[in-house]
Length: 491
Image 1 (cartoon, rainbow, N blue to C red):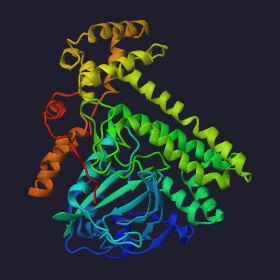
Image 2: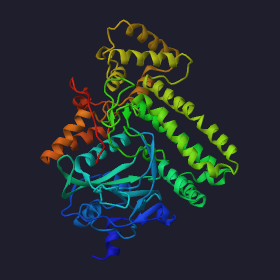
Image 3: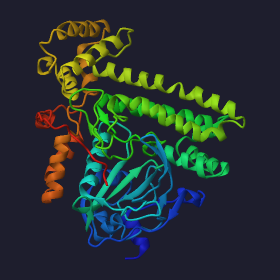
Image 4: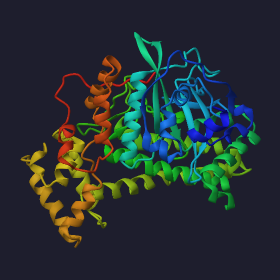
């Protein structure tokens, strides 16, 4: 089979616009081959959206591409350079175990990054082996696809292949490579890298590239770089509000883990909150609670301030005026976030219009949920199904008066009850990737080679708002445990 026929059969239609930036921003290299790759899971619906031939992707040649053993025609593999504030400390970073092989142009004309994660050492590996273990790669697959089904902007997972080689961590673990799809991998940390170690011309080239790729309307603005800042702020305010509304905790909101596209990126020690508590932390390395659930909106603002700092040389030639312009935009972030969050909380309670007292109604509910250790997702699901008696709040002194206020609020909006119920059904997921269910699936896959548990879980998670009887067993909170759930970075 010729390379040309292979390209047409498989559907790869790759371009490399990022590689046309100054080579200051990347290092060109090829993935490190692996011994005996085996396809573990393929996202067939996503592959079809990308214009790829599912049958060919499952072939030996297709799996070789996912493993990094074969480079598809048109690819120009590279590792991106970036920096970042990690838990508040600034450092030089970069793709230490991932390669961008190119940008797929879809049948709809969209451009998306295709990245291999776990594909070997790069100049940015900082002593690491550049590899990834099967469990964490399957975990990212599950969580990212669940987020997509929940309607939250996210990178996607196209495939996971086992490498046939062990990776050495505390013990030997089976190795794997994840093929990740993203609108781009431009990060706040990419701009920090340019601002700290590049020239103003290089920073400008990066900003112009980002605008052209993600915010083309800004090209006509009088100050396109101020428009870039404004658009990124708006997307992050929308994204983080959606995280909060479903109880998602990212775990490592470092500036290198914030994509300017507004997509959730880098699923390391992330998890979904069970019992409602703003102080919830799952990451084993977040000992101070910097990235706790309740802190995420504020960390989002902190990260955006670092983005604004990186853009200062482009915002205005006078530094004082540049700082003022940046501060004016950053000051709008929390208001935007709160507006998005409040609209989402109203929807979760079936409220379709606005009243001043809504914030107090919502705050009182969350206070009760925290006090009585109510499960976040289950509480709103019970309300959606008209079964408040199934919540931890039912029968408490505070609940009956609150419930009366809520019902009176619904009556005042003069909307039929079935309209409110439908709003709640579309706003409150019946199922989320609960931590214990994800761990069960990963244990079966990584330890026993049984992928059926994961496949069933993925099927349920693909329809989070179905509220169907088949989902019942996946809706229950985890069993009580004296040990808090802990996650680890996916190394």
